Amino acid sequence: MDPAAKSELRSRLESQASELGFDSLGICAPDAISEAPERLQAFLDQDHHGQMGWLEDRKTWRSNPAALWPEARSIIMLSDVYGPEGNPLSLLEDGERGYISVYARGRDYHDVIKKRLKRLGRWLIEQEPCEIKVFVDTAPVMEKPLAQAAGLGWQGKHTNLLSRDLGNWFFLGAIFTTLDLPKDTPEQDHCGSCRACLDICPTNAFPAPYQLDARRCISYLTIEHKGPVDEALRPLMGNRIYGCDDCLAVCPWNKFARASQEAAYWARIELTCPKLAHLASLDDAEFRQIFSGSPIKRIGRNRFVRNVLYAIGNSAEEGLLPYIEPLLSDPDDAVSDAARWAKEQLLKTL
Image (cartoon, rainbow, N blue to C red; front, side):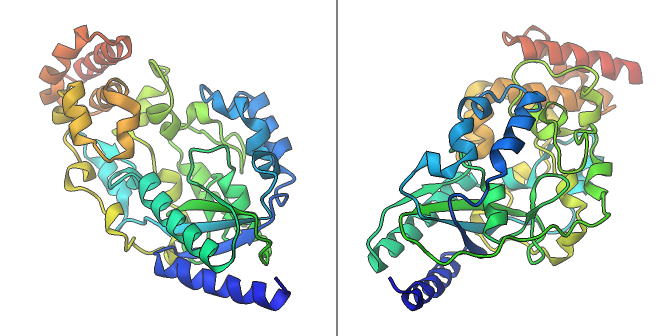
């Protein structure tokens, strides 16, 4: 294609993406994140990835999109807003209820975004014969550096992507294509001297601006970490039972954020502020039923109930003691350990 045809296709691609519900689109080259290998290796060398061994196992593909798919000539990055109505952190004040991260209160975003990416990809193939591959979070693709290279935003001091137009409540998706499309200018950092996200972190998971030690991050601890959580960190988790939004919620750039228009991301009533007493009583079948179609289902009943018990231990709610007793002899060691700890914590408040 000549430059004029490429530009015209790019314009139509943006319009089609908008019609499908995406909030912004940017394009970069596969070799646009040349600093990624060094940064990823430094993260791994400090063991900041914790139990996430796949980051080490697939680091070559992750840090170099050209190695993942050598035929790719352009990477189309897209954003999809999932922002909440109001300030979600107010739910942290209710000891009888659990806090679930905003992104996980509706349908699983992987399914929602991948369907849209495939539709956009098919449209692109119809316009200009090419090959495509679509990715949403689970593949060895560094979406945030690629999105910055594509001009969608920048990685803030909390390591999440920020946008001057959208704040930081949005998902990312990627389409790799063999088409050579016009590329965007990378976005620059606009955090300035602000450190709100660093100062609010309950567990001090940021050893320095732009660095995250996942081993102390509540999102990692409640979702990825297997087995018992370090007892020194448990009181700092509060009532957060799946994920953590503190560093996202306090970002000043959220003054430009907006609530999601995608109904699939709207919070299910039972996941907005669920009662810990009910969640502690879930068996495996009940857990699977309640969290069908939710990203929460992936961690399984045992890890989830472990988190619920930590929240109960932090609740200072004497009335939750009866819900702990049956779990003291739970077959899962992490659950029974969490039950023991929760009972000890509650008895201290009597």
